[in-house]
Length: 494
Image (cartoon, rainbow, N blue to C red; front, top):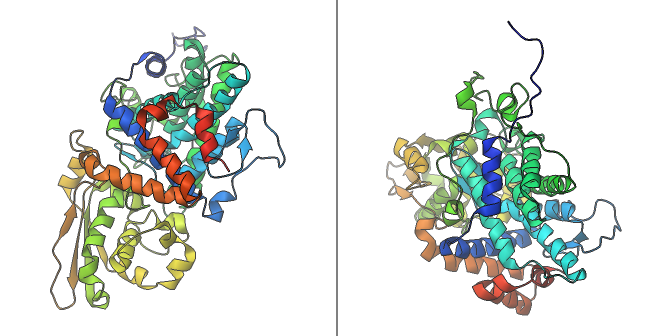
């Protein structure tokens, strides 16, 4: 007979939660490629944060919530004089590294930026190191930071491989929160039960909608959403370490769990998924795959699906710069994800809107031969009406092979092609770029560009001598890994 009561037998933790906890606690990272890439990722991410400090719309968010607050063993925000509690410091660091859309990227069924997790990792590591030293204990080292980065990248990236949170309208920062919570709890000394509790709280926490990333509501929240997620992660880890009970069925609980509440419908037609379809799918076990294959944005501060399009546009610039008024149409060939996320027409309301518009990100380098963060600003856009004129001439089409290769785990390409047709019927060659310079397949070519980008970004905040000191320390793998976190942060603080 039907029952009018619920069973109150407390379940074991969901296996998906247990897998994350066991990976964080027990997996040994042996991949030298992962360790080296993590070091370069640290450099690149910090550089992106320093560059963002040039923009008042970013810096207005930074600093203590209550002016004058003094914190014992404060976490520093690179490039600033802020000394904060680790929760707010995580928010600030996460905000600056994401602000210009210039840090690393992961593309799969879900998209995201795993270096966003550095907000939680670096803030907490700085605070804990100072606290340990005050207690007469050894501080955390930068190897601990790199270890946490590899694990956070892996958790976020592996969950993203087969699970499209965007399809149900959720923002990818849910994965930042989960990954940062897991590594933050470990850094704080969590045992397995505390770690399971922390992760479960990250899953049942309120999750962000993608509204602020898409037309017609795209705006600057997308630049601080990840900082908000890393900040919340540090808080949830702290709650768990205080002994707060977990929620074992956070994902699978009937009617009330994450799967039934937030992962049960398709965004396109709102049809209900079957129970099996709601559960996360996994292409591989957690290891170091994501860090090894991470994508760096080295040439353009632009949404990653447009990186190869920007590269193609720069290639075409010499052929078209003196013939812009003669252009009849611009044919863009791309993949399905670019069409879904960044192909848009009509008025672009703000910089955050422009750096997520494929057509804008192609028009600027066609005209000027480059694309920088300043090119998204309101004044620049208003001063160059030719940008929108070129946007109106663009035709965007999908290449099914490009879309297939994008999802192929052995390729992971992000292909775009551009061909320009002039009014007299002549046309340029079709310039296709399959892999951006920040791709794993172009690592040898990309690392010098990454280091050059880091050097330039350091110089936006520090004198030459200090910039060179920071760069040299980051290039010395053994020296960096052995360095106490608080000493490293000393170099970056004002």
